Each structure stands twice: as C-alpha cells, then as structure tokens.
Length: 150
Image 1 (cartoon, rainbow, N blue to C red):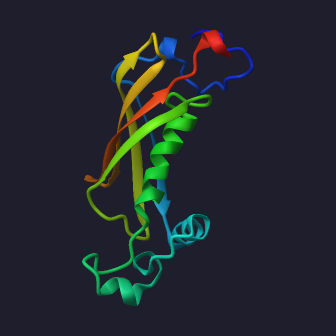
Image 2: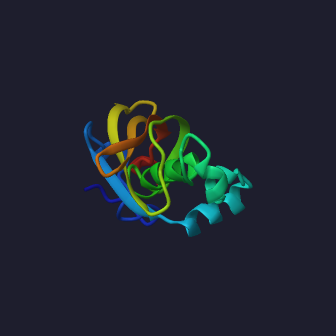
C-alpha cells in the first residue's frame, strides 16, 4: 500500500493501486422511507413511486423505487470505496432493467474495466441486483485520486 498522507481515507484506492477486475459493493434495503426521502430531495413525486392505488394500474402493478435512487448506490460505491474519496465523476451511462420495489435489498457493484494511468481516468462497469435479477447496469468514467496529488 502506498502512503496516502492525511487527505485520503484508508478505504480510498489511488490510481497507482487500481487493477482491472477490482470490485467493490454496497447493499441497502430500499423501503418507503428511502423512497419518500428521495422524492422530497429530488422533487420527483411521480405517483408510481408514492401512491399504491395509482401504481397498481401501471405496467409495474405496484409502487417502485426511483431508478435514480438505485443509481445512487452506484455513486456510493464509487465515492466511498472504488476508487473512493477524491474521485471525480466524468460520466455515467445507465440502463434500467427491472423495477426495485419497496422492501427489496439492492446490491450495487462496481468493477474496474479499464485504466488510463496517464489521464487518471478509470472506466467502471456498474451493476445493481435484487437477488439474481440485474435491475440496473451501466458504465462510469471517473478521474481517480492519485498518491501524487494528495
């Protein structure tokens, strides 16, 4: 391990230590409290997320979590673990594959797919699952922290 100095927390992985295939995950159960809090913060009050009677008559046949709430778990992995604090988001693609329902436990995983050491850019494969079902997949490009710049 490189000596990161005092600016980077222990969990941060600087670009000099990243390797293709490295992976980190976070899991969270998404309840109505999280959905309602996200609705309040984002101002997205679509009734498919908040009104069971309305949502029952949609293609989802019941309430679902906001897709971006699920995507926020990907951001949590990137910002807290891989690469971690000091990471700058440059881009993110997302494909929503299946709904997340209140009470579902979501496991978000980020895996290093490519590293451009000269530009400090890292390409990350991103996925979120509920059980064996992939509910979200995509790719993030980030500027990773460096031991040379802490």
